[in-house]
Length: 164
Image (cartoon, rainbow, N blue to C red; front, side, top):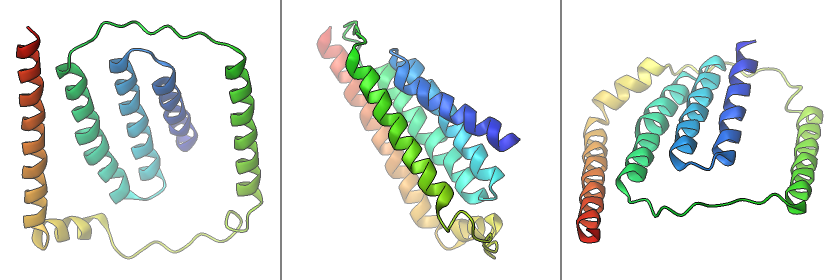
């Protein structure tokens, strides 16, 4: 039941990303989509992938996108979207592709096979490896991302001053 609820939340968030015209609202819907995916991963027993989803995508990528949007200037151009016949035909094509993929997945031998055994590696073992064997590369990546964020803020502020 929880899987179905969070799958619906994830699909609704992804649909909102596509449909919303305000860029900030789209990014917030993207964060909801990432969070829904993380919960789905956790429900499926993939703890490391779920926590990585939260840390990398929600914690880093989505926040970086929010900062990039808020620091860049707004051109003020209002985009008008007109719905015509091409929207209907593209919807029909999307529904057809979805139906073919759903049929193929349902009738494949992989979906009817027995569940594989859980791997022996736990999230705690992966965390210990990151903090003991790979501590230096982890810190270097953190410094690199921090330097990239500072550079992006500096460039955005410089462009704002030149625009004035």
